[in-house]
Amino acid sequence: MASHDDDSRDVLLAYRARHAPPARSAADNWQQLLRRIDAGEPAPALGPVEAPARTGSSSARTWAFGLLAAAAAALLAARLVWPDSFSARGRDAGAAAPYQHQPDARPQAVEVAGPPSAAASRPVPSDISPEPPAPVPALQRPVSPSMPEKTGPEADLARELAAVRAAAQAVRDGDGATALRRADEYLSAHPRGSLVPEARLRRLEALCLLGRGDEARREADAFLADYPQSPLRERAAAACKSSHDSGEPRP
Image: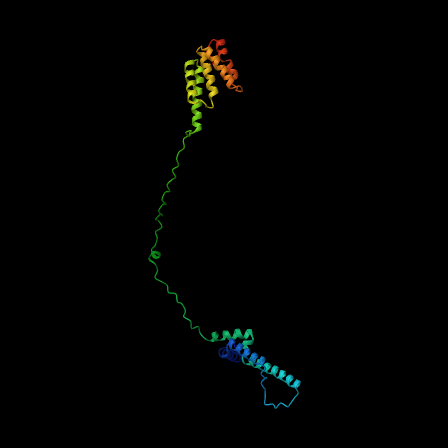
């Protein structure tokens, strides 16, 4: 329990905090005092003392001591009158004193509970199942064919290969006329095709099957001259010979 001395001290601190000049005014007073001292104004006399005549050095020393004494007296008086301005603890206590004895006059916000919403008060039956989510449509991806269609150079090469294989199959079947026709169709359609050597070999073999040996030999000589490094040279040179030796169509 606080004593009467504590209550008196609190009242004194609150009074000083309320009626003390602001720090700005105190600083201005000190600045004015310093300017007056810098201007050479004599120090104020502390009492009615009749100063005897002194020499110049004694007067200057006396003036300096008087100035220091006046400053010390002013500082001491300020500390006695306004101790809050020179103590951090006093300043905090003085600043908090008015709020310790006075109620807070600021308006306080009062929260008022609103009426309960109808949605919150309505009970939700437990037997109602939530709606199922909408089905997501599956992405329709185009079905690629097992064998993509060949276009461009690949298609041309496939057609050339099919024509040469048809002529070769006719030679194996002993059908010289069909083999000759297939070979001539390829050579007329693809004079610079990549399978021209194979087509010429099939034409040479077809002539041998038809018994046109002179034409076959001329075709063989031309083939050997045009393709000196071809791996088909031996077959071209022995085409008609093997056909005549066997006496039956060459497989």
